[in-house]
Length: 154
Image 1: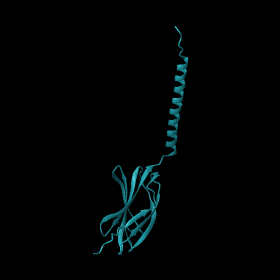
Image 2: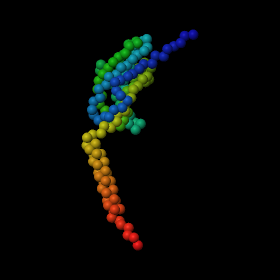
Image 3: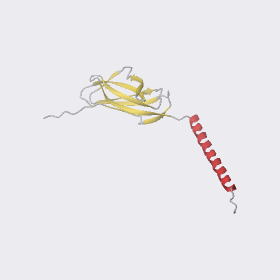
Image 4: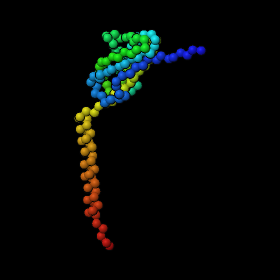
């Protein structure tokens, strides 16, 4: 009896699981596609941006100006480039399409969180300062009222 070894391609990148992101700022990307099979395969890299469960941006990344690219037998291919996303508070997903099998065989994803701007930070700081000063002033007023109330014996 012979056993068959599974040859599942892998996809990896240099990006962390999540980043604070400002829409429109390019993200530098390094991707490695590994083909563990004993024959070459053609693949495609599809990028999706998903927000609230809906795909809001979708594109195929090109390698050497081609949508499909070959990875030799038992080898890997490293590619790099930049992508620009127009949204934040979304999921960035890169998926590897096997052209022969006509299915997605691997994927990686990253959360794009809203990056707080300086004006937003100053706005929050002002609000916190206002609440703190209001609470401080209110407590002094209450203390003053309590201290002024005198109890006179009958």
